[in-house]
Each structure stands twice: as structure tokens, then as C-alpha cells.
Length: 87
Ligand SMILES: [Zn+2]
Image 1 (cartoon, helix red, strand yellow):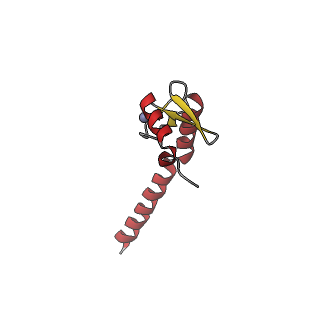
Image 2 (cartoon, rainbow, N blue to C red):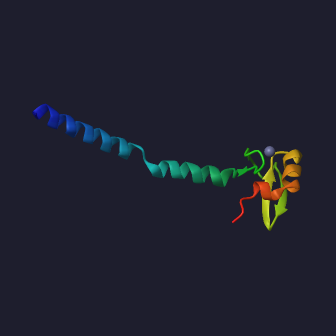
């Protein structure tokens, strides 16, 4: 019985230890850092992550969309409703 109790305490300690080790603040910092340094956008056609400064862009319904290539831009412009989620 004593062994079981100490086992439960051990498991609880490990669980708590793991929770404190996995610091969500660090992860958040990394995301915001990457975001500010090189903001990436998602091509709505092929879902590829691209940098806006090298991407092809197009404005549809007052929103700028970015594409990896002219081909994706053409696909988007042909049927924008297919790629833009309708609210
Ligand atoms: Zn693309």
C-alpha cells in the first residue's frame, strides 16, 4: 500500500514537472519573433507558405492575397470564391 502511494506521488510530481517544463511563453515568443522578422503568408490556392515580398499578390474584396506563382494567381482570379472562405 505504501509503495502504491509513493508511486502516485511520483507520477504526480513527474506530471507537474512536465507541465512546468513545457513553457507556453517560450513557444509564443518564438512565434511572434518569426512573425515580426519575416512574416509569411499562405497561398490560398496551394496552401504554400510564402514571403509577401517575393510573392505575387492580388486584391480581392479589399483583401490582398499572395501567391507563390503567377499560375496560382491565375487560378485564384478565375474562381476566387473557391479559395476565399465565405462568411
Ligand atoms: Zn501556389
